[in-house]
Image (cartoon, rainbow, N blue to C red; front, side, top):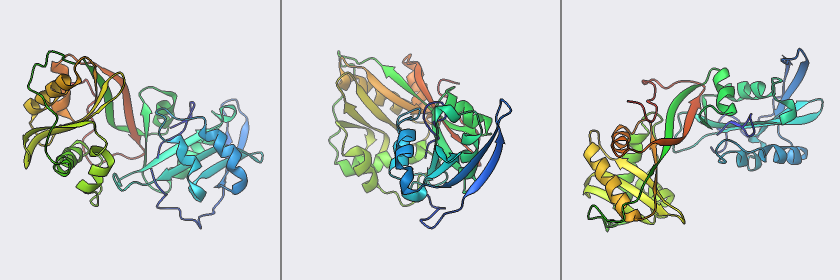
Length: 315
């Protein structure tokens, strides 16, 4: 969400607002200083391109969502004060995670704390449940929390030192990549039970989205019944790691996966992202003494019908 420099996050064409959606609304909002601001919301128009482009340049907490304002067509909503476009918002769905729409809100610095962002946020929520991704305790996180949004998932990056001595016999997986994609999809569905993966997503989708671009892949257990799986990408300064167990209770497999990753990384560190639902990975990381950094929250306007998330690093 980028109210403190960027917007509220979101992902694809808005399912509730087609090209014909042209309703305009006006809000009269008392600003904190007692100034009454009249905010008019409407669909974006061709003449708004420069203003929306400047709002997109404000960015967002993670640098992932502000660009949606530029490729949104008329699914973008804008806020107008005194005939000036001072805010923009978009919500969009994703076939990967259809339970909530993503959302992104951006407001010009000169018009923050005047009810503009709140009006845009309320407008997005009126079309259905929405979520956003923010850094913990950022201005954006505080903004949506004030609107009643709650944390539905947390993730953190962990840094593991490489192991140049090669403590385990680790080699990149030689299984066909379609086999790895099937295992990785099993892991991914399990790790996202809090926000279920769409039923139409297949191993072929995972192959194209993640596995094909990996520098190497890791598999623990039998190919047809894997215990854990991961993909790794070698960068200039470190290796990036994404993966985990394919079944509940596979903490030993999680530890072996990380040991293999460290051996392959050699003298480079391994950057591991672990979500709050990945209990076995979190336990294995804690055993290795890894500390969470750069904690990111996904916050939503409505809660799922499950228990709340576990914060990374908590017992």
